[in-house]
Length: 348
Image (cartoon, rainbow, N blue to C red; front, side, top):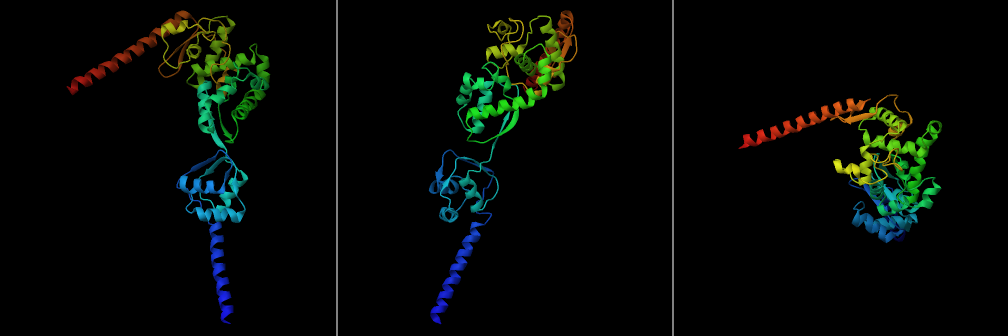
């Protein structure tokens, strides 16, 4: 009887311990991030390395011995590369199974409009954690671009502004291919009939859209600006678009008089017609404005302080508008200078 009691006591103790550990396996607070945490595994890792990362590096688990016990019980010994979002509590079973099966969480990447290749490459590189030079190199790869029916001069205009979800392990060319496909789905497919009906080529329309993107601060003004540029193209006038000069200079700043003489095919003050290709990645609103310009007789415009423009049909009227806004800006600067002088005098 005494021996039987000891056996029963041992079995009861084992059941308690086993039950406790099984409960721990299912415990929803076993993995407990204090804040949203991103786990990046660049290569396949084995259990000892993973336990170090989760406990000692990320501090989202407390007990390496228990974590290893759980992984061995589940039969998981190696874990797949990828990005994993740990933004809530996990059980050992749910997290370890997720990592072992490689069930990645996509990375959110927002491409904003009006940017050039280096800026877009940097955005992708920061989010996807690869070298921005690799993105730029892909955008210069003629054979890769040819498969997408693009060239080095047209690719920029097809980097469609959107928020994307990418798997972190995707290489740069796969990411770019996805972006180009988005352009086709959002631009070419819905508006292919309109593209075909216009005298400008598809490249010309996207190039014009990129100039509109560079000029317009407000979406509701884009069709008006588009109408003006269409009028200039029809009259074989210089477009005289400041954004093209900035692109030629590879800078973003206020233009000086000498800048308008920069020797570049993108300088629309020196070369008639459209530049050789897009100068940024235009938004859908700018592309639609290029496709559907407002019907107007405007040939000239001058920027106003609120970001809008004053439009004119004649050069004489344009000069009047330019003088008006120059005088306004001069008066504002003088008023600001007087205010600063007054404050300095009062302080003395």
